[in-house]
Length: 440
Image (tube, rainbow, N blue to C red; front, side, top):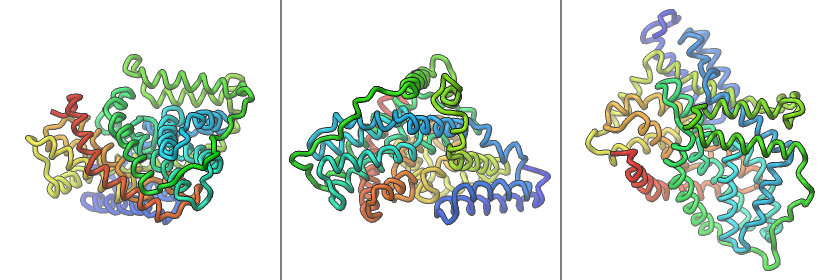
């Protein structure tokens, strides 16, 4: 505990608890911008000396911060070079001419882009205009159920399915950064993908398609067809960016061989994108990078580190375990309890905030169960990828706004897929973990 705190002893714990509630409440409610809440945390934590500066600002030293930043640079490069739109339109040419196939193709497209564009908001900004153009081409005019379904299919698939790809969204990075900072855990790209993709991406993607088609029934126009792809060759910048992306993805997949963390691979890709002659962006383009999300991640990780530094994390862990006790002889029970706790935290503090709190408590949870620490950390992905309301994931809200879909329609679909995930996906995921031997 920080002995030089202005408050001292229990006063420090109380003040840190109040700061935790304040920051998480503001992030969840959106009453003020995320960056304002992040700066508020840094200011209050230092004014009241709740923890040393190295702890409060530890988020900036986390690999999660640098992976988010590099993802922003790569996303900007894909937009500026036109490679992102070209890739999306090129893949759209393979979409089926049936409505069901159209929705399935959009969901698959949203998931495929998560491998090469590690930014949920960037993929939403890129895909929604493409989806609206495709809807026009397929005869799905504004106001049609099929148009709402197409926008929401991409809006939900982008944050939910990308949970299965380690560098592809903010919650994953917050989880990985906190696990690395608190426990020294290194989460490998390929093992993570094998553990989560078959159920949380493929099975949940099928569930999303079925739910969308059922809730928003429609049919494509008789003479409709996909949008034409510009036949002009790729620009030199787009070709260079393609090489950078292929190399980056190859290094991510093989991190078990070279042991270079995904963050430093992503950061190297961002630097190459900004290099003169070799890169694809002028150095001045960095000014267009949205740093608010980066500071938000740094503040989240710093808040968790402060909570653990003064012992509040251990107290919260004991309180949660007293409400939902774990049993060392019941792995299925513990799997359900831990996934449920992560889902509840996601309802309370959104998908971006839940991993920071859950991971900080993972040590206490592992000691109370018969599961190893890595398994306890990984179970939360099942929880924070189960969304019940649009506000839990900013990309969904952004898609609703860009696609001009009534919020009530988005809420109906998230509720349906959320409860269906609890009843179908979570048990299926548990069986998959048993097959892999991740759970005894």
